[in-house]
Amino acid sequence: MIDIFRLFALSKEFENIPIRDNEKVELQKFIDRVPVPVKGGIEETATKINILLQAYIARFRLEGYDLNADLVYVT
Image (cartoon, rainbow, N blue to C red; front, side):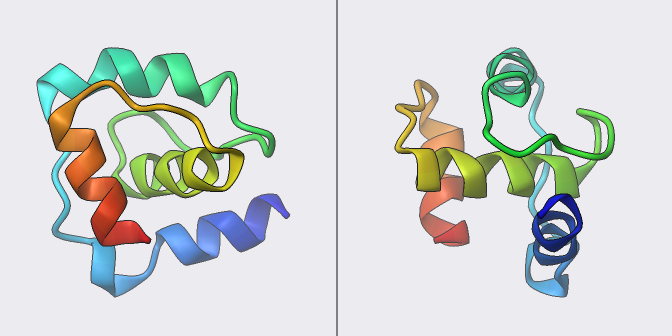
């Protein structure tokens, strides 16, 4: 499962999604709460996509507008 989420997150469609400074705290909070462990550091776009995908599946509530906008794109 870890590698399936990672493979999806490494898709070319998501390579231009930035990691914004204001998102790092919230992403760090979710990296420990997602059901499937995430490979990679918080500075990687693939990690952000992985977290957003799992947050969507687990129905987590995101706080930031930027993260919610990126979540809509991922879904």
